[in-house]
Amino acid sequence: MQSKEIVLNIEALEFEGKGVAHFEGKVYFVAGGVPGDVVKCKIKKSRKSYAEAEIIEILRPSGKRIVPLCKHFGVCGGCRLQHIGYEDQLQYKQKAVEDALRHIGGLSEAKVLPIIGADNIFHYRNKMEFTFSDKKWLLEEDKLSETIFKDSFGLGLHIPNRYDKVLDIEKCWLQNEVFNRILNLTRDFVKEQKLSVYSNKTHEGYLRHLMIRTSAYSGEIMINLVTSTHNLEVMDRYTEHIIKNVPEVTTVVNNVTTRMSKVAIGEEEKVYYGNGYILEKLGKCLFKISANSFFQTNTEQAAKLYDLVKDYSNFKNTDVVYDLYCGTGSIAIYISDYVKEVIGIELVESAVNDARKNVELNNIKNCIFIQGDLKEILTSKDFKKSGIKPDIVILDPPRSGVHPTVLKVVSDVRPRIITYVSCNPTTLSRDLKILSQSEYQVLFIQPVDMFPQTYHIESIAVLESLK
Image (cartoon, rainbow, N blue to C red; front, side, top):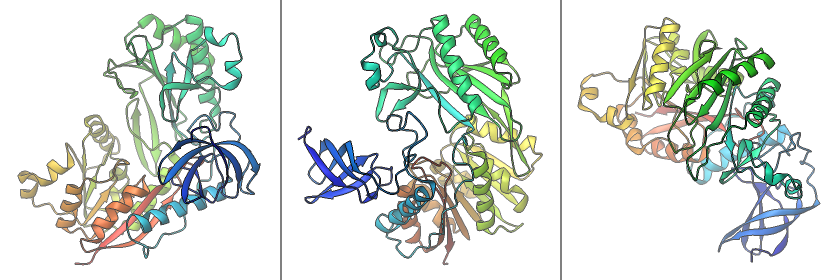
């Protein structure tokens, strides 16, 4: 069955950007398929009700299909939609939100406002993380090369669903040209110096990740080289090499981690150049962003998103707001001028520390940040005894959505408004269904495209208490 070939008519796109086709009672998911395509495919995986297929040949291309700019498209999983025009991308994302609300949330009557697109659909990311690998992904032209076996080093992004292989990338269209220069200069430096690369099998080797950040406000650029050990000589040489060739760089740091996980966060950090952070601005609020700080990766769209949260929540200057899953407190700080008090709660200690620093930076007196597990804090006796009841609750959870216990506590304390900021229509729809069964009415959902060329969708849902 794995070698069987089949001709399919692509009818739609599913949530993660794969083409959808039906044939003989089975659903086929086709990577790279565009609605309107007629394609010859090879079956990669087959189950009783569905199958996954790979395009061998496009027999008749869709009118919606365009030529992607990136030469890595189709192999790299970063841009799943670059072969589709931007207006069509927005339509597909709008439909993905509507479909999730209808099929998962049972909220077919919920009002979904027209998606808000981005002005800049390339070069918009203010942060990129690349992985060093001793096993790069071999393209077809690589496999024919006699020299490929002498050079298995790669610096780039993971192949989708292959965390043991990295695609060696020369140019990413989601980042600016300075980032691309840094990426290639770093690769050249590593090869010249013959530096070792960390192996996920042996857990030996020096280099692990290259992370680059920039600020739309200040133009500052940070490089964070993540390694398995300290090596002062190498870092001094690397810093000199980068500053000489890319004078736009304002700070270079080295995060060192002994963890086996692939997360680009270190246990120790040393600053080799500059002050170790960059300064960003949203609205009138300043934010110090360090190597391990979380911050929205599309600054321009983040400002739009936060303005919508402010406007849609209909704040009063007497309101007490809970900002749950508050991260580094960027939403709390952004809305602080419009309410009486914001209480942010976040599990990650480093994020809370950043939030407190940014409160001081902006001289804000009405934001309090609490570090700990949300469900434990909200259900604790001390928190209940505090008598602080929210008028408005902002939820900004990870992709997995809100914990059921947190949803229950939120609905029990009966805020006037719940503003739910989501990066996953599936878990958003699931959680809205639960809240709507607790006498909350979903007023509307506003999709926002934070990540053009990808399938990711941000949404703001606004709920009002019926009690």
